[in-house]
Length: 328
Image (tube, rainbow, N blue to C red):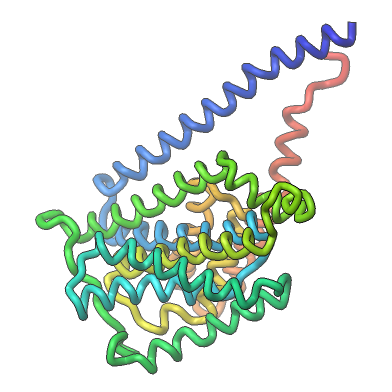
């Protein structure tokens, strides 16, 4: 009797799981369609603001990848975002390289520098790794200013070259950032379903088991850092194009901290909607609070606490409402 009940529940659970996955995919497609059509219904500076939001969302994903697959926290991803932003800006201003070439170059450089940082620090973890990444964030503005011949120093550089001639720049800035975000979200979705993604998760949670399968945790950590830093560099490149300018003031330690805050707000999610939540918190909330004067830090902290508490307790409240009454 118990076996028949178990088999019946299993059979009834399979369609429910399929329906849940199908509904999730349908909602994701609707979200993508809405984002693609949104510029035609927006007015004023909203296309500019949302372009920055998408670029920040990519940075949030970069930090979340490191947390999810590496089990580590970074306070220095602003450094790699600066690498991506200045790669695009320098190649355009000094060498005349178009964005379609400089964007992949920025990602590759971010991956290489991430690996170069990860290998010497491969034995660091926890607060020690976080502090070492913070050193990168502190060094970024100084390095940029000292290389003023290439970076433009305090004044920075403009990024204004068209990707598609004849299309308004406002739309180009919006869609380049959006397509970059969609590409990263899709790539991470594929990584979650791949053997390589499972291997990285195994190396993080069960190092001994990973060694038994021939995967060393050290190499997994280096690979995760390289992937994360490459995404951060793409975030910086998208920020440079969406914002039309780069300067050292945009890549201070606070920028790295805000990326971490956005990752926390998104609960380290690697999906499109989670990334958008983090990016919106970094971009839209400060804009809404811009007229609050000295109350901005207080209100921003309150909003951060509210989002975290809501995300923590919302699943529990929803589970109570979904719970069937006894005897039903």
